[in-house]
Image (tube, rainbow, N blue to C red):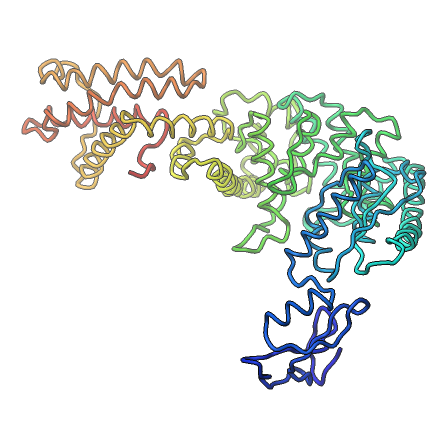
Length: 596
């Protein structure tokens, strides 16, 4: 209740008990004075109860007061009650930890009751029934144990022990639930009568982000990108485009208006009702995934294409308008979107040269927004992007062939937009580090691989895993130490300006040198040739095994050979050998970024 001030409390505050050594400690809060009396359950043991100590307080409330004082005690009672009513009725509780924690705080003397609902409501999608139970009534849903499907029952946690065993309580709550589910049935029938295309058309009237247009504009971009990504993930392009065009249609449905949590889920049901292919319907549901670390990623190719397209479009768009996460602020959940892309790519082994696609999307966005005009090319934008081999040409060379266009200021707009994508790639790198750290990988190894300019997340992960395993071996650790020694010598020479301009190895001088120098030169040549095949076939474990063969020759070289020889030609040749050590190891990763 209200005192004399502005205190707000989650429940009516009636008394403050504050007793020390059997005596009241006097004070007041908002006009409510401290004392030695408390109240119990409003029906079963109101009280008041006069208490002299904490032990007395606990004893009286948990006994005559009918109050389970701790959350743990109430949770234990509720779980035991759920287990009993389910066992008696042949049901299975659909576990809901979030709702459990909520009802633990709602009932001070929890009593579990099983209720019935009209079986006719089972014609509704089960998600609608469960969400209506959960959101509106705080009921738990149950499955028929034999059928493995939703049963026409519910579990409620009452705060009273009824003399009839809860029969009237269950009946009253059943009537309330029926009224809620009647609303759901009305929404369901009305939505089914509206074609998804008609719903999708309304998206053009809903703002997405002022600088990026409406939701309808976003859908157009996602549909185009999903079609182009489809071959990369093994999806049928027509199905990917179709799913993308319908993926957000249910946002204007009556059911999603009532239950926003069902976005995508209802779209799937409406698509199936309309006769859309199952792959399209599943993609509509799955394109929002993953929505958190415990959520699964899309597994079917059409869903993968649409989910990637949706998240990549969001990220590129917000980067293009300079709306990036800052510190702990991320109002548009861009970190979650990037983490979703990383997980989808890794868990489905999707091979994408990410930077090229990000830059291409940025340029495409500029074209769509009318900030630049594209002279008619011999191929469409995405056809030319997909024709790129080895990504040797710059994206600008890929997009535009006309000199007059290159000379215009419009090119500067494109350059600025695509330059932002390097920053976005670093953002992805941070998310990848997060995933790999959770898997036990080291952040410095990820940096070492990223430094090679690699942007295929699957390839990066394989390199990091192989590199981590290699460095955990004695050969790997010692070779890293040898690399660091060589790199430090070269760095010192570069700083002094004494590094020769010509750092090619002179075989004639090697032939005159000590055995350890000859052995290192031969080992480097052999390993350089030997790692070509494994690197090309992406067998990084085999490549590391070849690098391990350098460990002995490198150790022997530093043990027996003086790099800074008095003969300047010999010195230059030995520095060239160190450069070759560095270059050979950099074929696999930038070892300078590895700690140790």
